[in-house]
Image (cartoon, rainbow, N blue to C red; front, top):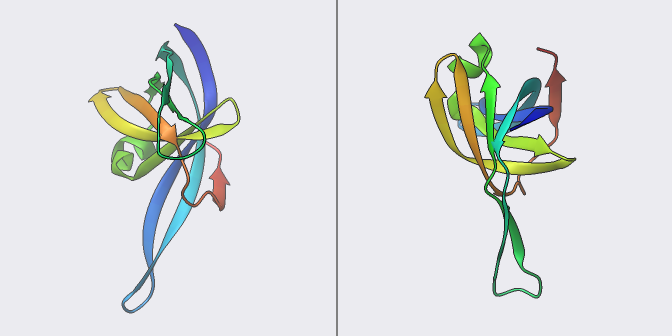
Length: 113
């Protein structure tokens, strides 16, 4: 088990005007433990293989994380943003299983925890 520090991105949907919705990314910093660290290459129809992480990150959740865990989109590991594929609640911890590279919106605000 190794220690982890990084950002978690929350994809929050807001109504900008009646009938128009926009996704905003809010990043927060967390400390945690990387309890499972494994990488895998997945063959695709493209030229290069896709790299998937099968990492598990356990964070000590603050009230914001507990209330907004359904909005968690990605975890930053070694400078790359990776999709969160599974969130397991083991209060007071959240266990995050990581999948492929996050290709969504990453522009947003960073909020200190």
